Length: 104
Image (cartoon, rainbow, N blue to C red; front, top):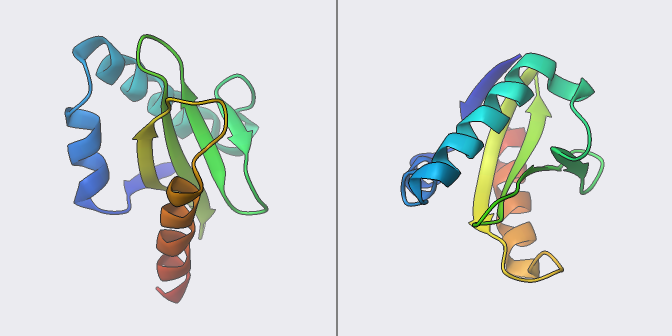
């Protein structure tokens, strides 16, 4: 499946990570591109009907929200996870981008 970044902010976020973490993020994105909806735990987790979480484990725990849209994958929003639960503001940011994506 083809992968697209929703906007430049996600690219900037990925570049701001530590080098080993960037490598893990890119490897996990490659897995998502190769396996698409068949990719499951521990790499992904379903958040809602159309929103999924790409999970990158390591020194920095990184989460990237993504969605399937018109047979493509859109990476919407990323953050460094610092607590057990996903902060509501991160989920809201991903849902806002998903709504805007639906308008296209």
